[in-house]
Amino acid sequence: MRPHVVAQLAVSLDGVTSGFDVDLARFYALATLWQEDVTLIDAETILSQEYAVLAAPRRGPRAEGPLLAVVDGRARVRSWDALQELGYWSGVLALYADLTPERPPDSTTSELITGYDEVDLVEALDILGRRGVRTVRIDSSGALLRSCLALDLVDELALLVHPVLVGGERWYDTGRLDLRHAGTELFADGVLWSRYCVSR
Image (cartoon, rainbow, N blue to C red; front, side, top):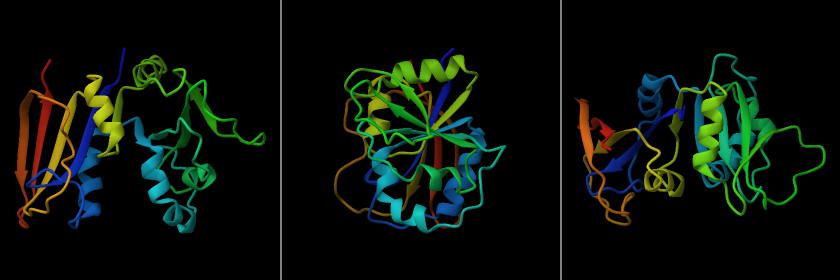
């Protein structure tokens, strides 16, 4: 059975995901609602934070934490050991495709290979489900989330809507998506946390 897939992202009133301050402590505290088994993230997000990852304290794997699965079809991520030791996740898993470039011969990172020239997200989630994964949280507001939505893989969507207009590219522009309201909470600073189930 395919896992339950959730995504949470911070957006402005005009649907943009950058150009404003986000309370990250609150963002990730709210994300614990789902108690995910796997955090799914793309290589672009990891690479954008690689300096901070390498400079961060190494607390060691968190046994009770989720598994970090990184979609890295071009094998660009090199900070696997640092990610493993950050203290957030129980382990790391690289999601590769058949045509992903060769990895270093001494690599010890666990791999899951699906798809030919790019990672097959449907197959990857199916395999994770067969391995006992029940809940996957997408930690991305970019191409990975849009791909999962386009493939009808997302079951639940949470938006932290910030009271600001910033202009620019909207996070979602790939057609109509029907949602069913599941709950809303308003914070003192005007941020609205709205949760929706994806209608099918």
